[in-house]
Image 1: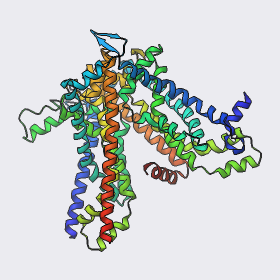
Image 2: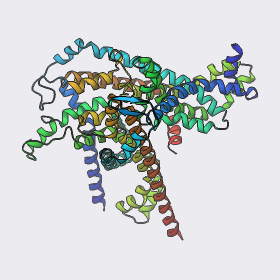
Image 3: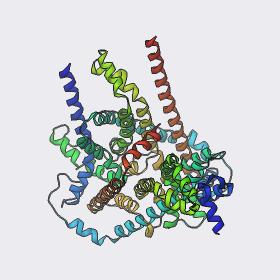
Image 4: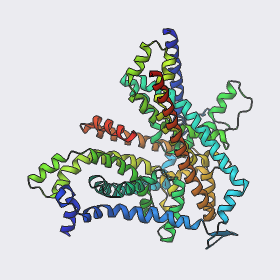
Length: 277
Length: 305
């Protein structure tokens, strides 16, 4: 009995190890290719070189695309944070008839196929004569990430204790002051959390951006996507490595910030439970 | 102006509740969602009734695209491929994710657990384009997989894994696996350990405990994982396009191509089909999980009596 238990456990660990390798392999392969001197798709790589990294400096289109990505993602996230927080205030603190329906409508982009949205945007924005630029993309992406803000900030708002607000009101604080000194600080964490999830999400968007953008406003995933369809050289591997490092740094930064804010663990656990149920 | 801003913030003191306040709070979101989201979907739906002839769009009210989409066997083949890939990916994801989630949930050491969690969710942080590129490198003719296979003597001249369904499935499983692990892990780590202990006290072996206690309790998590992965697969575009290289035709790839040749009516019809089918799949999976749970609980009741 005990030995069969052990065997099961061992098998499980071996299996887990294999899945782990499967998960990591593509990323390791990219790193390996970025420093290999042979052609991109040949294994094993023939030698070690940093020339592709040097080559990247000349590929200004990637840097430009990175800048576009930053602008578009930041814009979309800020827009979604402001509109989403205000809407959650109205929906959560003052439920009215049909507020549940309205919330469902606001969250519905989550289940919408992104390619459908991308094409719907293309048609609408061409009619409005703003297709091609980053402004259109920001509007479109904000819709896509609004559900994250609404879900996370909304549940945080629902968990807020009204005592602090009432106390402040009793002491004669003006409503504006109450909002900025009591409510907003309490929402800080959820704003950060939903903002960072939304940022990572928009930074990656291909479907919505691919058809919408003009060449000079390509974002990084689009530039990579189109480059990959045409060429097969290790420059993509180098850009990918830079992107992987960027994602890691972002992840560690968010973790660091979350850790420095006290009371995070409990809040996160509570919220998770709520969302799943 | 000051009055307006005060009203916006006034919702904190309930005596100042006013419909204006709510309305003003909702205006930005309503404007964004109303114009961009609803507006684009409506105009998009309208285009599905236009007529596309010889590369030109003609305004009109016609069911031509709907009719073509639903009757032409070519489109059914397309739908078949899309669903087959989604089905394969979902199946493999469950098979890989469940043991992984089970191991993570069972780990006592927080250090190892954290590492495994990081490893599982790390791919999520990396763009789908980048991950597809990684798989392109691995699966290509001269790539690592074929190198491995030929050196192990499994094949003489290597397999074709790029530009076909196999490659697309392998890469998609990689991309969606975290979405399957998360819900399963969630129910597994929330389920009551005392139930397991009770079953073992009553003399159930570890396999029996697993099949009568752990697995049924985690059905809900598996179901939501299936829901997420299956719908994501139906609508996945980047990976099928890049790994399939235009040779694996799924609905999203098809929609993209129709958009490029401005056949907007057909793109709209196919998109609507995609949307409806992902909603239907979600409903079916939900219903299925409910029925499964219900039967379980009834059985439990009978055993008690």
